[in-house]
Length: 347
Length: 216
Image (cartoon, rainbow over all chains, first blue to last red):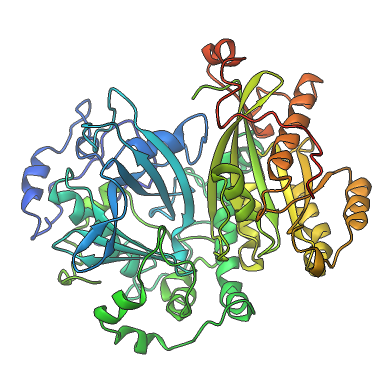
């Protein structure tokens, strides 16, 4: 089924992410060799933490007692600066305001994350903005939790390290990776975008792989595969447990209805266009159309791009649950597996 | 900022009734006229002062669209309070209350305090649901009721704060087990309980407002 050895799931572990040297490396990642040299052995610090992409502020917040969300799932995160396109890219907010963007998994046993987290971070003057554990905590406010299925992530400007985040309701954000992050981190995001689009060979997202059974038991996902365990968890008092389970259940149901509902909504006049015609849109046109406001565009017309997700082949084996994205180790380890050529500015 | 308790709220109701606008008015004191469909959850938070205690309201603003309904259900658990919102100018949003209430009852703690809100009270000329009907529905189902306007801010503070008062009253009566997170209540850091009373009451984000200000 897979050309790679067994991998851990998107489960939080105190142990460092383990990536064996047998994995091909990411050819264009200059820093990767150096990064691999930092690969941890038990008891050593996790390089993901050092890069500011694991156990960061966002992770600490959603795992805190205040939210207690997805407590067993790792969070892959980075700091971004929200920008808008003028003649050049312009920062929307003051330098002390950044956005923490992260992905995690509602159900830790899933091989891929399915949740996007967005938070606003206000830093103290002169403070390093990628510190995981700054001596003085910045003010971080969780703003949104979005199922990844309702989000399209693109690498919009590779040189400027800008991602374009577009929700199913056409909110659009242009996010520039914070300059304090090393280039390696942006390559992780590039890889994440690729995986979101194409999946990994170990998941049913990859249409080349015919899987005749569901890899993730419907609504009863547990690390041990024991449904009793899950049932017990569901009855437990942890709010996030039910959130995980119910979100998994709800997503595909929502997707199956969303387009009809959205298009029927008489307050809006969505225009339909085929996905192919969408693809022919030039980036210039996109940028003209998508002038972001404070948080992006509230509503526009074309939601047809999501239809392909609704009926995507990768969903077919698990109609009642998400097929979310990968753990950092998977991201890192798989970078050379089915590497599509890195696409210029947009994927 | 420190707090004695954290209450989780959830805002539910049909799409377009003004859930996000209510949240924005409460947290930022501003009104956003452009309808911006919510997906997933959007969060807001504010400190209020109830009976001398600093209480943090963690507010989960959910998607009202039917398409997202099944996902919205996953957010009920662990909520101490719910704002169930309808639009007084759209009868169908009132007609759907029973369905929302069923969801809320099914997926949340039985002690959850539910505030029924008839929003858009500034649009009196377009009223489609009488105030008495809202009151009757609330009485029948054991809810608190208010009419609000997110646009003019009328009764918005009251709606959030009166819900908090009712939750706090239940805590004092022992109806809420504050140590059970499933009830949507968390105790703040110990040191804050002793320091939160009094001095913070006058801060901007603290609001111990009078009930029934009557602006609507």
